[in-house]
Length: 225
Ligand code: DX5
Ligand code: ZN
Image (cartoon, rainbow, N blue to C red):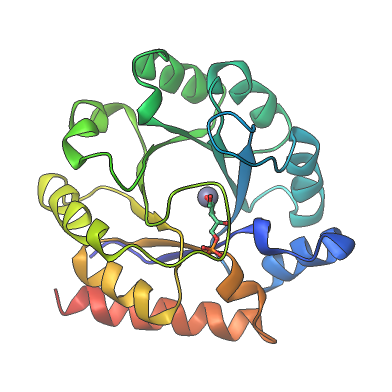
């Protein structure tokens, strides 16, 4: 069974205390920090710059994964910048496959020493990812339409997760959007093993306890598949 990974999304942090919020993720026992990058074109919102990746690296120290989710139209122009600024995984969207050379960008990210993630929006079918499974370290299935935190989990994505798991039993398979204890369990039962959660984890008084409970619940749901 794939190990369960929990990734708090910094988008839900209290920006007035950003350094402390990053440290809270570090202390929580989470596997990685998920950093959402938006450009106002690919999604109708703006968020974090490479400097925030550098801040995360400074606060988290050298080892912890910074999982950077590029919701931008030109990931090829920024991937290297984020790796230089401490991001250890670069995720970009397969909806861009007509304008971005997916294999070339994945190879460039790998050459710079980072992991690669390929992302599917809720309405992009699993089959779109199939030709690229050999050039990626993980696939992220969005369970909301990207752009904002705090949206409701889209249940109709679950069969896509199951299809990807059936196609690639060893795949690192992540969900992002509307994840809480219950939706994480359903995603785990469908085959996901990595879980991004923003508003749910940041609103907890004890993020570490919530990370542990989510990991335990997902492991149980995955074991009963
Ligand atoms: C949405 C982002 C998510 C977001 C999730 O565009 O990609 O990572 O932070 O937030 P929640 O967990 O609140 O749905
Ligand atoms: Zn994200």
